Length: 131
Image (tube, one colour):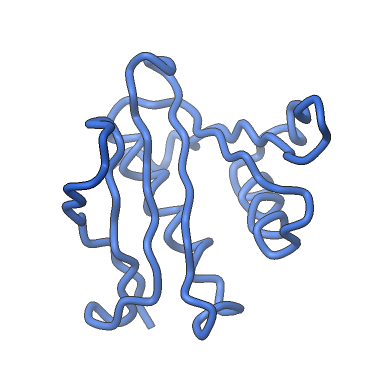
């Protein structure tokens, strides 16, 4: 099994700083998509990411693999960290966020929003991800 990202051109996206990628299984079957925001107005040192996995392909850690690929892209762009806003009622994504937190040796979620709907993960990009 391999997961690769294929940059996707989305003419409806109105933000030039968001790159969207198809998540490909074995270089051919699209199982979802992910995006990376490296908008310089956010911070020169940070960015954020997100993903969607087709319901019929959930449960195979594709989002984890895709997130790690996005970490590499962000590292190559000079980012030191990525932020993920995760709904507290989304157990699968929370599981991925906590797994990424452990893999990157990042601190626990830094804060919660005022309504306690989201947990906010500020994840440090390990130096060994820069190729």
